[in-house]
Length: 205
Length: 84
Image (cartoon, rainbow over all chains, first blue to last red; front, side, top):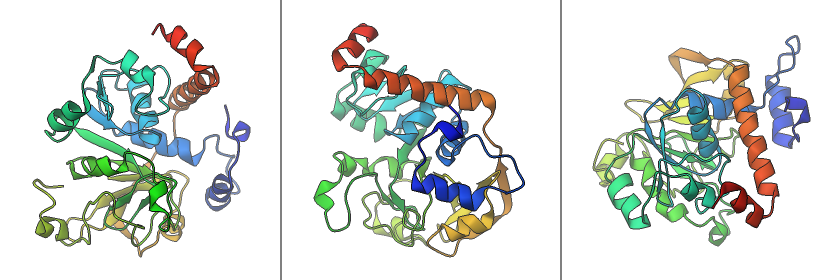
Protein backbone atom coordinates (compact mmCIF):
# COMPACT_ATOMS: atom_id res chain seq x y z
CA UNK A 1 0.00 0.00 0.00
CA UNK A 2 1.57 3.28 -1.01
CA UNK A 3 1.09 6.73 0.39
CA UNK A 4 -1.43 7.69 -2.30
CA UNK A 5 -3.65 4.70 -1.59
CA UNK A 6 -4.01 5.56 2.07
CA UNK A 7 -7.06 7.47 3.21
CA UNK A 8 -5.70 10.94 3.77
CA UNK A 9 -6.71 12.75 6.92
CA UNK A 10 -6.45 16.49 7.39
CA UNK A 11 -3.42 16.04 9.66
CA UNK A 12 -1.67 13.90 7.02
CA UNK A 13 -2.32 16.55 4.39
CA UNK A 14 -0.98 19.28 6.68
CA UNK A 15 2.14 17.22 7.38
CA UNK A 16 2.77 16.77 3.69
CA UNK A 17 2.35 20.46 2.97
CA UNK A 18 4.75 21.45 5.75
CA UNK A 19 7.44 18.80 5.32
CA UNK A 20 7.61 17.78 1.71
CA UNK A 21 10.38 19.44 -0.23
CA UNK A 22 8.96 20.64 -3.55
CA UNK A 23 11.95 19.45 -5.58
CA UNK A 24 12.15 16.00 -3.97
CA UNK A 25 10.15 12.99 -5.11
CA UNK A 26 6.91 12.48 -3.22
CA UNK A 27 7.55 10.37 -0.12
CA UNK A 28 6.02 6.94 -0.23
CA UNK A 29 5.48 6.63 3.49
CA UNK A 30 3.25 8.44 5.94
CA UNK A 31 4.26 10.26 9.16
CA UNK A 32 2.56 7.51 11.17
CA UNK A 33 4.60 4.86 9.40
CA UNK A 34 7.80 6.83 10.02
CA UNK A 35 6.93 7.15 13.72
CA UNK A 36 6.11 3.44 14.03
CA UNK A 37 9.30 2.35 12.28
CA UNK A 38 11.48 4.78 14.25
CA UNK A 39 9.97 3.37 17.45
CA UNK A 40 10.50 -0.23 16.32
CA UNK A 41 14.19 0.45 15.66
CA UNK A 42 14.67 1.43 19.31
CA UNK A 43 13.72 -2.05 20.52
CA UNK A 44 16.53 -4.58 20.59
CA UNK A 45 16.69 -8.39 20.25
CA UNK A 46 15.87 -10.12 23.51
CA UNK A 47 14.38 -7.11 25.25
CA UNK A 48 11.30 -7.52 27.44
CA UNK A 49 8.75 -4.92 26.44
CA UNK A 50 5.51 -3.98 28.19
CA UNK A 51 3.32 -2.94 25.27
CA UNK A 52 0.37 -0.61 24.98
CA UNK A 53 -2.34 -0.92 22.34
CA UNK A 54 -2.10 1.11 19.14
CA UNK A 55 1.14 2.50 17.75
CA UNK A 56 3.28 0.87 20.50
CA UNK A 57 1.78 -2.51 19.66
CA UNK A 58 2.43 -1.98 15.95
CA UNK A 59 6.02 -0.89 16.62
CA UNK A 60 6.80 -3.74 19.01
CA UNK A 61 5.39 -6.35 16.64
CA UNK A 62 7.21 -4.77 13.71
CA UNK A 63 10.45 -5.12 15.67
CA UNK A 64 9.58 -8.78 16.31
CA UNK A 65 8.90 -9.35 12.59
CA UNK A 66 12.11 -7.65 11.45
CA UNK A 67 15.26 -7.29 13.55
CA UNK A 68 14.21 -8.65 16.97
CA UNK A 69 12.48 -12.02 16.51
CA UNK A 70 13.14 -13.04 20.14
CA UNK A 71 11.67 -9.92 21.75
CA UNK A 72 9.33 -10.74 24.66
CA UNK A 73 6.07 -8.80 24.50
CA UNK A 74 3.89 -8.41 27.59
CA UNK A 75 0.41 -6.93 27.38
CA UNK A 76 -1.55 -5.51 30.28
CA UNK A 77 -4.04 -8.39 30.21
CA UNK A 78 -1.36 -10.77 31.50
CA UNK A 79 -0.20 -12.30 28.22
CA UNK A 80 3.55 -12.91 28.28
CA UNK A 81 5.71 -13.72 25.26
CA UNK A 82 2.80 -13.24 22.90
CA UNK A 83 3.37 -13.43 19.14
CA UNK A 84 0.19 -12.20 17.48
CA UNK A 85 -0.15 -12.65 13.73
CA UNK A 86 -2.40 -9.60 13.60
CA UNK A 87 -2.50 -6.51 15.80
CA UNK A 88 -4.92 -6.83 18.73
CA UNK A 89 -8.00 -4.64 18.91
CA UNK A 90 -7.57 -4.34 22.67
CA UNK A 91 -5.69 -6.01 25.50
CA UNK A 92 -8.61 -8.45 25.75
CA UNK A 93 -8.22 -9.67 22.16
CA UNK A 94 -8.13 -13.48 22.06
CA UNK A 95 -5.22 -13.35 19.62
CA UNK A 96 -2.91 -12.30 22.46
CA UNK A 97 -3.77 -15.19 24.75
CA UNK A 98 -3.86 -17.72 21.90
CA UNK A 99 -0.28 -16.92 20.86
CA UNK A 100 1.24 -16.27 24.31
CA UNK A 101 3.88 -18.37 26.04
CA UNK A 102 2.08 -17.83 29.31
CA UNK A 103 -1.05 -16.08 30.53
CA UNK A 104 -1.09 -14.81 34.11
CA UNK A 105 -3.62 -12.94 36.19
CA UNK A 106 -3.84 -9.16 36.35
CA UNK A 107 -2.50 -9.02 39.92
CA UNK A 108 0.48 -11.14 38.88
CA UNK A 109 1.37 -9.14 35.78
CA UNK A 110 1.21 -5.88 37.70
CA UNK A 111 2.78 -7.02 40.97
CA UNK A 112 5.44 -9.43 39.77
CA UNK A 113 6.24 -8.19 36.29
CA UNK A 114 5.47 -4.52 35.90
CA UNK A 115 6.08 -3.16 39.39
CA UNK A 116 8.95 -5.61 39.96
CA UNK A 117 10.72 -3.99 37.00
CA UNK A 118 10.95 -7.31 35.16
CA UNK A 119 10.60 -5.61 31.80
CA UNK A 120 13.25 -3.49 30.09
CA UNK A 121 10.88 -1.14 28.32
CA UNK A 122 7.38 0.18 28.93
CA UNK A 123 5.99 1.47 25.66
CA UNK A 124 2.81 3.55 25.66
CA UNK A 125 0.84 5.75 23.32
CA UNK A 126 -0.16 9.25 24.35
CA UNK A 127 -2.78 11.72 23.22
CA UNK A 128 -1.02 14.68 24.76
CA UNK A 129 2.33 15.29 26.40
CA UNK A 130 3.78 18.34 28.10
CA UNK A 131 7.31 19.70 28.21
CA UNK A 132 8.21 17.54 31.22
CA UNK A 133 6.85 14.28 29.82
CA UNK A 134 3.60 14.16 31.78
CA UNK A 135 1.11 12.27 29.66
CA UNK A 136 -2.53 12.32 28.82
CA UNK A 137 -3.27 8.83 27.47
CA UNK A 138 -5.26 8.22 24.30
CA UNK A 139 -8.92 8.66 25.12
CA UNK A 140 -12.10 10.24 23.87
CA UNK A 141 -12.15 12.60 26.83
CA UNK A 142 -11.92 16.34 26.77
CA UNK A 143 -10.99 18.38 29.80
CA UNK A 144 -14.69 19.05 30.28
CA UNK A 145 -15.79 15.41 30.07
CA UNK A 146 -13.24 13.25 31.82
CA UNK A 147 -15.76 10.46 32.32
CA UNK A 148 -15.49 9.56 28.65
CA UNK A 149 -11.82 8.66 28.94
CA UNK A 150 -10.93 5.15 27.88
CA UNK A 151 -10.99 2.43 30.50
CA UNK A 152 -7.62 1.43 31.86
CA UNK A 153 -5.95 4.81 31.89
CA UNK A 154 -6.01 4.89 35.70
CA UNK A 155 -3.84 1.79 35.75
CA UNK A 156 -1.33 3.27 33.35
CA UNK A 157 0.58 5.18 36.00
CA UNK A 158 3.14 2.43 36.35
CA UNK A 159 4.93 2.34 32.98
CA UNK A 160 5.88 6.04 33.14
CA UNK A 161 7.81 5.29 36.31
CA UNK A 162 10.04 2.80 34.56
CA UNK A 163 13.60 3.54 33.60
CA UNK A 164 13.13 3.25 29.88
CA UNK A 165 9.78 4.30 28.58
CA UNK A 166 9.34 5.36 25.00
CA UNK A 167 6.05 7.06 24.27
CA UNK A 168 4.63 7.86 20.91
CA UNK A 169 2.20 10.53 19.86
CA UNK A 170 1.44 12.67 16.85
CA UNK A 171 2.90 16.15 16.84
CA UNK A 172 0.69 19.17 16.97
CA UNK A 173 0.58 22.21 19.19
CA UNK A 174 -2.23 20.57 21.14
CA UNK A 175 -0.54 17.17 21.41
CA UNK A 176 2.89 18.50 22.34
CA UNK A 177 1.84 21.32 24.62
CA UNK A 178 3.20 23.41 27.47
CA UNK A 179 1.04 21.55 29.92
CA UNK A 180 -1.05 18.45 29.35
CA UNK A 181 -4.79 18.80 29.93
CA UNK A 182 -4.39 16.71 33.03
CA UNK A 183 -1.49 14.66 34.35
CA UNK A 184 -2.87 11.14 34.34
CA UNK A 185 0.61 9.71 33.97
CA UNK A 186 3.17 11.65 35.89
CA UNK A 187 6.71 11.82 34.63
CA UNK A 188 8.80 14.77 35.75
CA UNK A 189 5.84 16.86 37.01
CA UNK A 190 7.18 20.43 36.79
CA UNK A 191 10.78 19.41 36.07
CA UNK A 192 13.91 20.50 37.95
CA UNK A 193 13.65 17.54 40.35
CA UNK A 194 10.01 18.05 41.39
CA UNK A 195 9.25 14.37 40.93
CA UNK A 196 12.03 13.29 43.29
CA UNK A 197 10.98 15.89 45.88
CA UNK A 198 7.33 14.83 45.68
CA UNK A 199 8.14 11.23 46.62
CA UNK A 200 6.57 9.77 43.47
CA UNK A 201 9.71 7.94 42.42
CA UNK A 202 11.31 5.13 44.33
CA UNK A 203 13.90 4.88 41.62
CA UNK A 204 15.34 7.17 39.03
CA UNK A 205 12.55 7.72 36.46
CA UNK B 1 12.05 9.12 25.54
CA UNK B 2 9.23 10.45 23.41
CA UNK B 3 8.77 9.49 19.76
CA UNK B 4 6.44 11.58 17.65
CA UNK B 5 5.75 11.69 13.93
CA UNK B 6 8.29 14.51 13.58
CA UNK B 7 11.21 13.46 15.77
CA UNK B 8 12.54 11.98 19.00
CA UNK B 9 12.79 13.78 22.35
CA UNK B 10 14.68 13.02 25.55
CA UNK B 11 14.56 14.82 28.91
CA UNK B 12 17.45 17.18 29.61
CA UNK B 13 19.67 16.21 32.54
CA UNK B 14 19.12 19.32 34.69
CA UNK B 15 15.75 20.79 33.80
CA UNK B 16 14.19 17.45 32.77
CA UNK B 17 12.51 19.32 29.92
CA UNK B 18 12.01 17.34 26.72
CA UNK B 19 14.74 18.18 24.22
CA UNK B 20 14.80 17.32 20.53
CA UNK B 21 17.57 14.75 20.00
CA UNK B 22 16.67 13.40 16.57
CA UNK B 23 14.64 14.48 13.58
CA UNK B 24 13.38 12.43 10.67
CA UNK B 25 15.10 12.70 7.35
CA UNK B 26 12.58 14.92 5.60
CA UNK B 27 11.47 17.01 8.60
CA UNK B 28 13.05 20.35 9.44
CA UNK B 29 13.81 21.60 12.94
CA UNK B 30 11.75 24.72 12.22
CA UNK B 31 8.67 22.65 11.47
CA UNK B 32 9.15 20.72 14.72
CA UNK B 33 9.48 23.98 16.65
CA UNK B 34 6.29 25.21 14.98
CA UNK B 35 4.41 22.07 16.08
CA UNK B 36 5.62 22.23 19.68
CA UNK B 37 3.80 24.18 22.36
CA UNK B 38 6.87 25.46 24.20
CA UNK B 39 10.24 27.01 23.19
CA UNK B 40 11.90 23.79 22.13
CA UNK B 41 15.52 23.10 23.05
CA UNK B 42 17.54 21.20 20.45
CA UNK B 43 20.47 18.91 21.27
CA UNK B 44 23.89 20.10 20.11
CA UNK B 45 24.41 16.89 18.18
CA UNK B 46 21.07 16.37 16.48
CA UNK B 47 20.72 12.92 14.96
CA UNK B 48 18.90 12.33 11.71
CA UNK B 49 16.69 9.23 11.58
CA UNK B 50 16.90 7.51 8.21
CA UNK B 51 13.77 7.03 6.15
CA UNK B 52 12.10 3.62 6.37
CA UNK B 53 13.64 0.86 4.31
CA UNK B 54 11.63 -1.10 1.78
CA UNK B 55 11.71 -4.15 4.06
CA UNK B 56 10.46 -2.22 7.07
CA UNK B 57 7.63 -0.62 5.10
CA UNK B 58 6.63 -3.96 3.58
CA UNK B 59 6.57 -5.69 6.97
CA UNK B 60 4.53 -2.89 8.56
CA UNK B 61 2.02 -2.67 5.71
CA UNK B 62 1.63 -6.46 5.57
CA UNK B 63 0.95 -6.45 9.32
CA UNK B 64 -1.70 -3.74 8.98
CA UNK B 65 -3.26 -5.48 5.97
CA UNK B 66 -3.45 -8.82 7.83
CA UNK B 67 -5.00 -6.99 10.77
CA UNK B 68 -7.56 -5.26 8.56
CA UNK B 69 -8.60 -8.51 6.89
CA UNK B 70 -8.77 -10.41 10.18
CA UNK B 71 -10.87 -7.78 11.88
CA UNK B 72 -13.21 -7.54 8.90
CA UNK B 73 -14.19 -11.18 9.40
CA UNK B 74 -16.88 -12.14 11.91
CA UNK B 75 -15.36 -12.99 15.29
CA UNK B 76 -16.48 -16.64 15.14
CA UNK B 77 -14.67 -17.27 11.83
CA UNK B 78 -11.61 -15.43 13.08
CA UNK B 79 -11.27 -17.62 16.14
CA UNK B 80 -11.86 -20.74 14.03
CA UNK B 81 -9.07 -19.64 11.67
CA UNK B 82 -6.80 -19.21 14.67
CA UNK B 83 -7.66 -22.70 15.87
CA UNK B 84 -8.97 -21.42 19.19
